[in-house]
Image (spheres, rainbow, N blue to C red):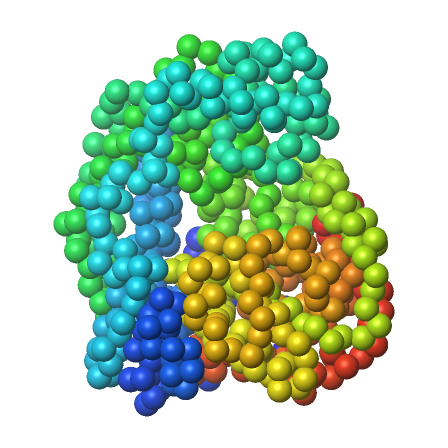
Length: 548
């Protein structure tokens, strides 16, 4: 089965629930699956956990929940005036958090019903029993600003680094708060390349510049809307997962969050001086989103930047909400990516809701990785295989098959066993942010634990294995000269041309999602691909989709 998948789109661009596994019921052995996160696995031991792993929330159930909640949210925004819609759509964090809360609550509830006593650690604790007061003051809202003096020093230092290509007077000017181009959000290579190619000097700004003392009553207009939406969300949750949530707490938290965002909108509207353009990263951060939309309504051109390395993958609906709604222009790193992303936008629902232009920015990042790879010798045959691990976090993404951290970790364990039994030296490259949790869990598995960045340790491997492509490490691995084994279980929808090039770069191993959200793969195909002599890889995907 290939990764290409045809989507049947419904209202608001959301696909109907589809069958992605061989079963949706709770397997009989699920009572032994008594943990909800990777820290729970560490407590009972990886062997005991794997013996009966089965996740009780299917792809179909979770996607139905996501589709219902996102659609209600977008439909409500479509009935509002522009300023109120901006405020509601800026806080993508609240509905996103609620989805994770309901997913974990449902898993916990179903395991209890099946007779288990599900344990967990700190990974899912905030989602099983949310601290709604803390969520109302989340840092992503921009309310935890430093003093103006600290802000100025920090922004001047960031601006100085951003403007390394500019003249000395330009760098001094932007550090002093001058300039018609502003940057908001964390530094990315693509934005840095945009500045250099455009020969712009950029003033770095932060949320404190925009935060007013009050929101001018903006959030009050949404009180009835949020009340109606929480009622609808509760109905969707009951219909799809059979679980409830604290409606009053969610309403209170939501209004508090909107109040902070309203203050940012008020401050952005009242600026004494507006920039000509805003270069925006961290596009999903609520504070960044409301600032961008408010400035755009004042005539500022907001430019957003592509993040990640799946250049030929079709964006799923929620990624369009994150990437495109806050911006007027969207910059991508290649002509291929531009053509695919623009086509998807023009043929989809987003084009009728919000106008976005696309532009290509040349970046030397991927060519630099290719050049570095040329200095490392190609192995004659594969002896050492590196499994590149996925972060076992609390996030389950909608519209991506079996995209759940424990499911990914389980198939990574199966891969390690399969490879070790076949006589390969197996390296497990842990996600850097999860090394402490994973090091303890993997102590008994037949592999060597590797920490740090993939960029620093990749020559130690003769080949890589990826269980999915939704990792920034995957883009780097493509630029090396090592063979890549990719489990092909339909997890992502690709442009036909992009998939064809990817299949020439990677050895595709058939895989399937089974009952209990377990991934099984074709072991014979996997081992057969690794036995082949190593040769220089076909880099057409990198060159066409990522560079040109």
